[in-house]
Amino acid sequence: MAEKAVEILRGKMVESRAFADVAVVDSLGHIRFWLGDPERPTFWRSSAKPFQALPVILSGAMDRYHFSSEDVAIICASHGGEEAHVQQVSSLLERIGASSEDLACGVHPPSDQRSWRTLLETGQEPTILHNNCSGKHTGMLTLARMLDAPLAGYEQSDHPVQRKIRQAVSLMTDIPETDLITGIDGCSVPTFYLPLARMALAYARLVDPRGLPEEIQAATAVISEAMRLHPYLVSGTGRLEVTLAEATHHRFVAKGGAEAVFCLGIPEKGLGLAVKIDDGMSRTIPPVVIHALEDMGILSAQELMALSEVKIPILRNHRGLEVGRITPTFHLHRGKILCGH
Image (cartoon, rainbow, N blue to C red):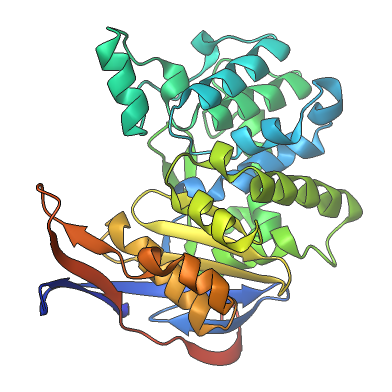
């Protein structure tokens, strides 16, 4: 059961509380720290994107289509629809001989508010390239090309692209393919329903792939480096992935997902962290993630100072007046438990 993780204060009084489950797992599958239920199952949503990109890298597409590290980052992205994101996706589509009409992710406005205002002010309509998943879907089209599979229907669960992704998720989470449960994500591709501890295990293996086949180790290194070095392409202006990278000199591999899921790999410790906020509200993710890293002793005093406004964010009203704050209230439990036990 989820435990209380933060209090939302108005003035000095508690107005709301948020509950969370947290799992921190090493690459051998041991749960090292936790809050609530580390085996709580939930949908992985966009935090699964590095593993949906894994078969793209394994296919040899980097050599055939001259992928840069930035290209790898954008196929792992939930981007904000900013101009740099749109251009990165457009360039990759052109190189693989596909177009935006081949994308099956749907259209929504840029999640970056400045980019959305720019479109409104210039009388433009959002396109499918502004969809936060357009990079991931371009990666899937790339994999279809490498498999000599049809582009049409690549989002369907029985398409060769999705079968390859399912194999990759199974490998990295240690869950048999036949046991993987899926739903349909907001962008129409399968999304995986699995325990937080298995998400954390996958991120631990992403940054510490020892024991995995050599080709997997090489591919995870490419993805980890791209996400670590290019968090802006993975997310966008003002997002937690960027804030963490700026404050910590790009130490972590981080990726958020819808309904308040957030996952992170800690390379120097060989650990993966997975967070789920029980009510699905993302505003409490940054305080929980930062406080969890602090509680594990991962962050230096200088890094904590740089992240102080993220750990305890100030709440302001429409006039800009300070009215309250969000405060973490938890301590992680410590131990060493094998996933699934």
